[in-house]
Image 1 (cartoon, rainbow, N blue to C red):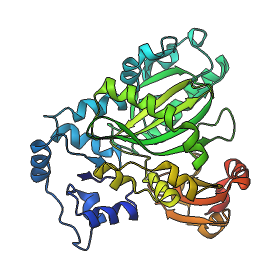
Image 2: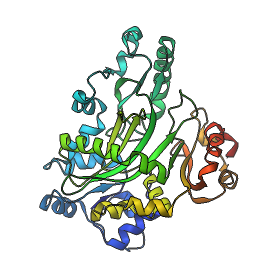
Image 3: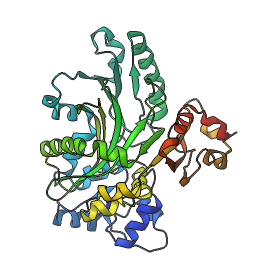
Image 4: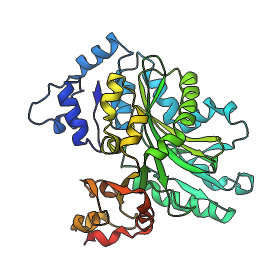
Length: 388
């Protein structure tokens, strides 16, 4: 079963649903995605009935924008509570508190940010919405002075970003302050099968331009990344799944590792894999269709996959637009020049920059020895591709 919502439905997701004749909730996004009557959509009443007949049935949503509908229509099951457990970062911290007994975190209301004494915080720290998405409202704090700067920035951003996503996806009334988790950052697409066993679909390395960078501009995956981290990440997922009693449940989890098998969880995103259908990178890199694997309970053969993709690195880059840019003044995008940054682009997705602060997503294949080419991308000013 699928619930499709904004911001984006990929061709792979659309094709997979059509080929498998999956049950899809009929809403505006689904109707816009299947315009040629190639798929019979389920009206709300029928979709809810199917769910109630078997609440263990796998449900996937491409976007957390569906959470509000799930809260109102599938409340007779445990699904809404499990979603909220992960969407609310404070609730998740409470769930794993004994796993990280020395970890500092604190919640604060937006209206009370000015009253916080930064001398009482575990600086360096991160401040972000308790319920958030896409690095919106997230700020790194390296010093007491940096705290005041972050608070001022948040105040300026709130009015700008609060209308981008539904309240269930991005809530700006409550923020959480967390100590920084040191180490390399990764994002993991995984699902818990019918027996509650975690299955990893992909592991992305998150690249940053600097220590202060909190953007989502670039992620990479490779057989080496999978081989090095798969087992440790799977053990972590087992513990989280046991505590939350997860079965037939997809997640996108962000973690940091210090290289000594010590893992710190940044956040867990429920009901989906990587947002904006970025999970499709697994298909381009390894031939793994994330949606089919979840729905059919399939497990990747990572040994076989690694042999086929040896020496390759696969990147996902977001064509983000700086917050200072007035998107209404953009006349066009020079997509050809943007695409020319990559010697072997796999897919370029054009995004409606009038609605979101993004003009494109691109997947690309690189030889392992050329991975440093991505540093140029991390530091690039993408304004050069905007025509005003």
